[in-house]
Image: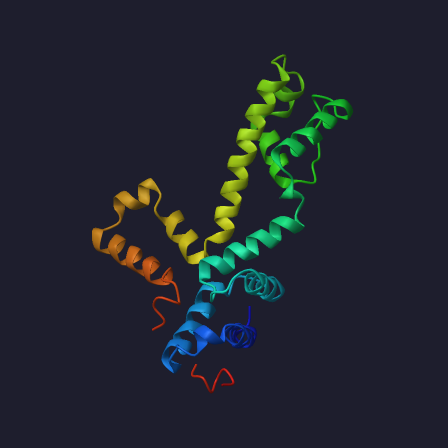
Length: 207
């Protein structure tokens, strides 16, 4: 995501919500742009534009960072093979039972299905003597959990994901309390909604 795209997209977003834009000072608009640049620069231009337009079509309120990222995830999911419901994904697994040997490796277009099958074990699944309802229920539980995990990762900004990764058990134990407090404060500051705390002038945005 380029600064030019962010500026243009923010200007259009503000224009779409005149009832809110009129209440913002030049300083707040400047801070809003800085927040967008900081928190959304990992999203490709086309995806970010589509995500913001999707929000504008559905909401009467200026979007928060979280809402924009969730909108992007929603669009990605709709366009992905992973948009399948768990029951439909299980149907593909059942079809694979008939065409792929237990000792071979199946291929699934849906990456979530592939991960779950790998976790459960293809050989174990295809040779299972458990009632189908039992295997299906376990598959659907794993599938929905994996889907939620992937979507949560996509919603998180890189900074938050890096913070979570840095807070594994060993790192947390070794980290000084002051460092932990500073990291927590940094993440909290980055997660602040631009509508609540907007710390580019109107001229730089074309106003």
